[in-house]
Image (tube, rainbow, N blue to C red; front, top):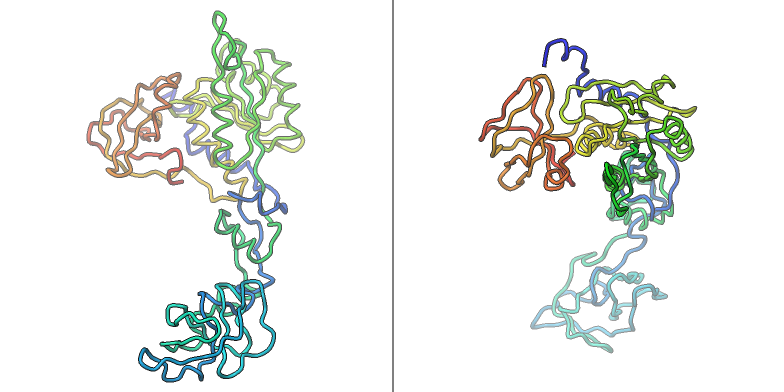
Length: 413
């Protein structure tokens, strides 16, 4: 590659900065707590109640007064009259009187006058009277009102990433809805007259559309809403109509194909006339031809990716994933990497940042390259769980070198 070729390219970092400077955090909305898993809180959540909401027993046992158990031991058990049972969800009326106790179940409200709970294991488990061989401390085995959460507490702060544990807390304090940044709706369009739907018999020169299903799955896997639109042929008006039709329901549009310099690269042709998308050569392999901008009155971000499947997938991981995360309120930026020992050697183009496919071993902190560098090699891509990041100035990775690795499929951000 000549110096003049390098000079005409923009860097990976510059392209990502353009993307992240353009996309905006989605406006918050109230959603049922059943629908907020994986989303980010837009506002602090303040609890209207305390947890526990009342003093309750942490064990099955007997609610007692401490004065009645002074001196109780194995050789000198205290004997108390059992007034009855207190089950979870029931309330004992009145105050516990001297010389008496109540059999109580885990979670049941502690009766007035009781100062501790004696576990069944410290008793003979009597039902009319009970012999107790050990005296508890004050409040022992009692979950005190407000010991977990106090009414008025901020229990979850804005920016919290909601998962099962946080949703459980919302439910426990009685929240039915939560203010969150919603799931972005991401429309995926595959372009190319050579494409057919998977399962359709292939004619001469035809291939199955792998990009649409792969990118839609990638969107859905990160908690956004992927919407796959049917294949669009190499017809400029058809491409334009398809994009415009989707803007009413899209927060992001992704197209694949039609962004190089060929006679039938209609995505580039159509969007260039609108003046909204900048098409660039980015110094990366795979995925050099990139287009990005906004379309429509609402300035919907649109990513126009190369049609080769490895290029499209790598572009998603490097540019679109951080963009979706920013829209959801998740901390964004370049993908995190881990350092690993590379078992294998390969070349890398001078002046381009290569994202080579690899198999990462988290136990041994090692990675081995998978297959070649061709952007059509979906078989190799399917075997990989990582991208080996080779800097622009490095032209060769030698067996045993330390390399930076982006871990895919649930690896670190």
